[in-house]
Image: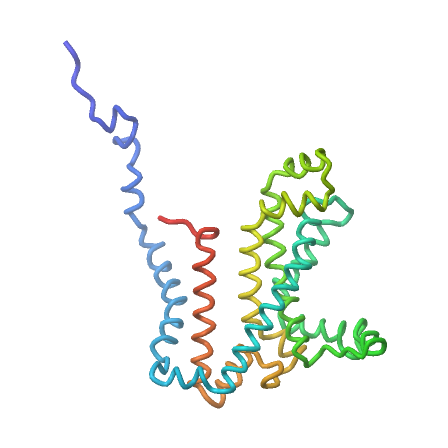
Length: 284
């Protein structure tokens, strides 16, 4: 005789009275977690929904084609792109040094490089003024030797945006470099390639996704920069007034224009998140 058949769940080692099923655990949401979770969701989403509800959709085309809005939009796109290019040219080599090179004080250098992430942007603008202003530590020599004045110029906007955006790219690229296998570089060097050739032909293709993600983050951060820009470059329409500065100014005189510019920045932010969803987000 054979004994009674065990349930399928018990024979397979899944479920059973001693071990709850995964689906049951996922369906059961504790009330102490559900209520604050929903409140947090409302806290983050209601302001964005209010922006969409109160947007002047009928007058939006005229707002977006106005001279002031178009100048701010054009300057923001150009300066953010230029700042991202500066971050790529300088930030990728810096990330390689932090990830692969051994030198004294590397941890301190990494902390200082990432400091603009937590530094108040206005403080960053003041620091840029003290360094690159006409009487700054470096700026006085730029003015005396080359006649270059950076504050309150379009170039100053690019520098301010690059200062706050570059750490995003450095962190992304450094993390990708640490995850990449350095043996590919070592194999290329043993075959006769120089270190720079190995970096250009082997490492760069390996870390290209990390560079792309960091560049997108840097571009979005540069596009939304406010504090360092207004402190170091000022707020002059057509020359240094970017979209965040235009939003701040329009909110006092023309709220509909402020909402129109805010919608553009919101759309850019959503596009950035959509572009990075495979890197930072996982499905259910």
